[in-house]
Length: 262
Image (cartoon, rainbow, N blue to C red; front, side, top):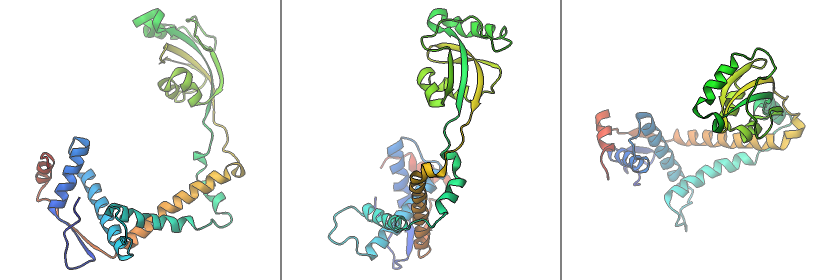
């Protein structure tokens, strides 16, 4: 894609209607649908970012003896900001404080203890769901009613959502972990048929001690620092430029652009 229109001021970036057209057509060619107004604005913002980083890379001479395309020059500038962030070691106490603010992402999955009554699709056919629904009305306590033999277990103890999904499928597991313990629920569908489920407990294990996940916490903290450093560095670069985006005259004009092939 051609760069923005050249002008006498190296700190001015003009995104002409022709550039907007090329951006819109490029999106259309890739995704086979027009970009929304929000998507198009995001593409223009990304184009401006690439142009700024490209120009800054040229100022640093990163193009010398380098045949890599211009986009790679912009990436080099991006990597420079990331490298600066990665050199900083966290001060004492920083990682533990960060962990305390992000404990949810380190907490183990909730664990379900449950048993179920199974209504086999291959045995009952299209009536399996209705028969399960009728049986549900007769279940008043934890005691299970009559159902079909299940090839695995009828009861499970402290199973994570991933473990449940491996047996019953992701749809069943997602539904199970949205229920309230202490009552019959269902019919809940699996790849085998329909189930009435009694959930004894849905227990959420405590978050691990900081010491046991310290290395992962440091890795995640550094990743966040790199992202923030890149953002701040780019905003500082962007402040040096005047960015002028010349959109087509109307929304109808943008729509017309995106219905045409290059």
